[in-house]
Image (cartoon, rainbow, N blue to C red; front, side, top):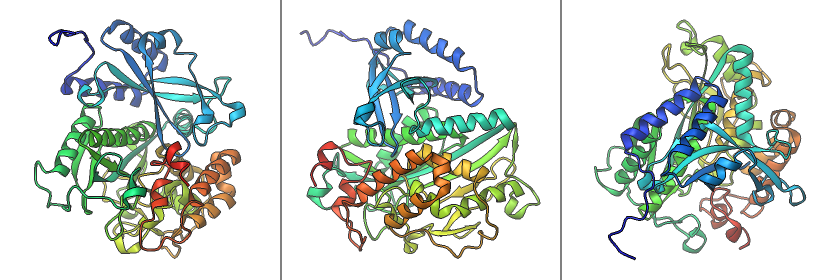
Length: 476
């Protein structure tokens, strides 16, 4: 084959044009543009753009792992209303005897991706897992969040907003988490943290590259920086409608993992992969609006919050123990809830105490919000945001919770017990899905030491839901 021949002409779009396309797509979602009109526009685009070879359709399982299927563009154009997959091969989805599930396409949740990171000629869209009859699949948390948010908008004109501060740590070598059982250690790419990382060093190169991709994909970044712990990072971006925000968490982690892999590194979202340093969290900022009005703001309210916002906080605190497993779904997550490292393990609300489950940041008419701090970066963002939003709106309410006095569990076994025994989590998720999630968490916990101790154990890494695979799961 002649080395000078250019045999492929696949789509490659400059970063500034990518940002314009993705921001317009995001705006159409946020303003709830007619989905059928968007679908027709997307199909026409795919038909007309000859340089696209495949469409990546992604969905998230019950535990929060992202799954991606690449469909040939020509096939997808003919079959987009009749896609199926084997649900029994996905942990937490259907049993073997009822394995077939449908995969719909959420056409407004459409993204153009940088070709230098994800390869040329592809676009990405989020899928909707469906039962055989086309109704939303009961274990698809994205569908639950989207349906709840849409219902509240239709009933009361309410829009749920969220912004997630996702922390992670970068380690040397690709697939460092999967190799942990053999190596027994992680190797930092830098021991620098806040203010000590120089421009162009490996950590800054990773952060800069990841942030560039996020901006190109419409994240509207605000601040990108190393965090306190060695090799730790955080990239902050603007708040948006709740379902879009949860999608962005999945894309954030995908982008970080892909960029790290290309640099022969591993971007880890384990809550506490190394003892003796700060763990990683996913502080989740929440507000609710009606039109242009932030319903959480009151100029004369306590800490600038309205009574509505404080009741929202009180309901979350009331169900703090019940929700703990949703917000911290892994054995490793309970290492992070350690008061020696600014751990948010106290079931209370405070404007200044970072040990509180809920913090009240300084805000104004536009930015007033509540920040749920006790959530790990390995939580399923759809399940977590749905649980927080619905609990804040409709959950049980016990007065006097803000001052504290209760502590979150320090191990996953107690969290599983609270979760299983709660009538509220059954109402929140449905008994079948609640029990299925608890069973998955129990299965992983049973493969790990019951007492955490001071050393990270290989099993809590190997059997972590974001790390393990069929090969690793069977090495027991």
